[in-house]
Length: 181
Image (cartoon, rainbow, N blue to C red; front, side, top):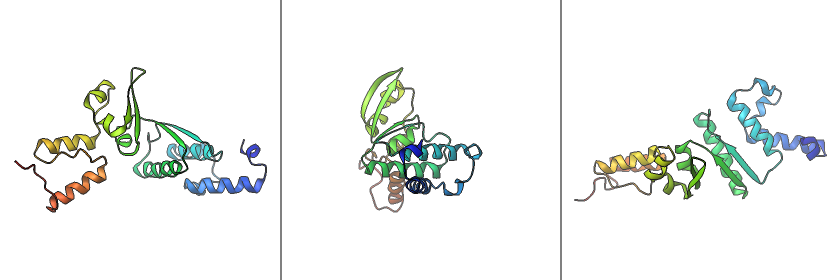
């Protein structure tokens, strides 16, 4: 229990306050965990673990059942933990999330590793994604579809924000949009 980890009650209280604040859970301090929503319960579980300041974090389907704001909050949390040089392992079937935010992927199929390397390269490979019963990320699908109708291939665009910025520039005629023939 945390009481064993923090001998000083004031230190325990300060750590609890800090973690609740960082997960935006202060308003639930007096509420029973049984009365929290699924997303709130997930955040509380992670917050509880973070009180122990682990060096290795493992998350199984962290985006499942989370809305866009909760996912954005999770991404910010992961980024802050990466800056602390923590080891972070994320198990997910959320290809869009992985493609945009996870730098390295170990792709599995039928219990065996089929690829290990940069996420954008692995998840852009149609053969590998099909072998693992996945589909190409929507960002990659859109890039290929635009290429098929005459736009320059967007091979180095890896996020929905980048593709949106590119398309806005195309519409504003700030970049060449059609391949030179």
